[in-house]
Image (cartoon, rainbow, N blue to C red; front, side, top):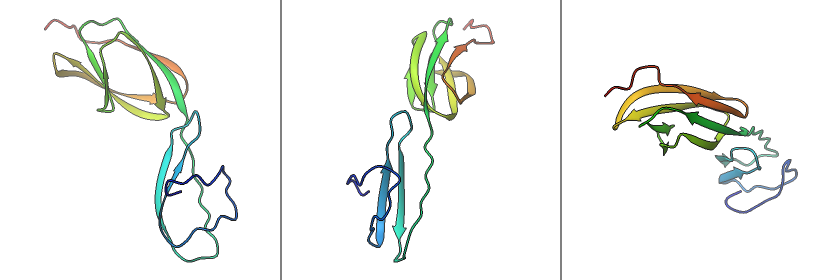
Length: 124
């Protein structure tokens, strides 16, 4: 809490002074969670948090000359790559010569392998 470790969950009988606070929850194999709130004077505060699991994903393609971008953030052009992705939907953008040629939504809900195939002929 506020950059100071306060222990493992569940946390009980922890006194929190009124005012703004930042919580960061970290657990191996899960996406970390940061939460900000303002604590008002009260007898008790109950907070429930749910962490999204992180899955190992293998991404492969046989296509030539493509660059891939995940969530407008991570880019690669390798034919094989391993990623650790948070559970949920991710946007895969595919580029050829700096032009978007494909865009897909990928659902990550377990460890898996994605094989990318371009459906149009790459002639240009």
